[in-house]
Image (cartoon, rainbow, N blue to C red; front, top):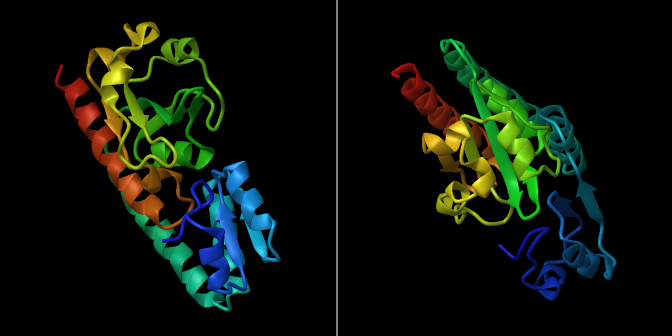
Length: 215
């Protein structure tokens, strides 16, 4: 792995591979992309917002790489697996109120496709997706679960810092200790890793629902 749209090990290493196409997807770091664009590369920038956008991008990449049939097959597989999770989620009587965070400073909620996954998994995103939000807005929305999936950080976010936010002292997710970390790649990669991300979301939301139902 030579890098991504956020961290680039070496542009020279990429040039040495003589790629016919370089694909970059959100989140971008301006300096990283600028380094690439200094060279005569075919660079495809992708900025999906929804699951439908992600499917369209998969089809586009499939067409560009002469793998159209494989791309269509992948989309069918993803839909089937999301549908299986949605079917399990329908057994729950109520939706869990969720705040998913893509970045802590400034606070940015997870992208719209994550809000779709939350709904598939039996939850409801309680703030606008993919937007800057204040701590007061999150507190007013009263999430019952908070999910930290910070871009380009893997599983490094520390829930303890979230429990210390003064504005969130009376938030249900804080009182009941429902702050969870989901690996960045599983929710922020607009592609097949979202299947594992959805499974992770389902497990933690199902657990939150069970605990609330037992009270």
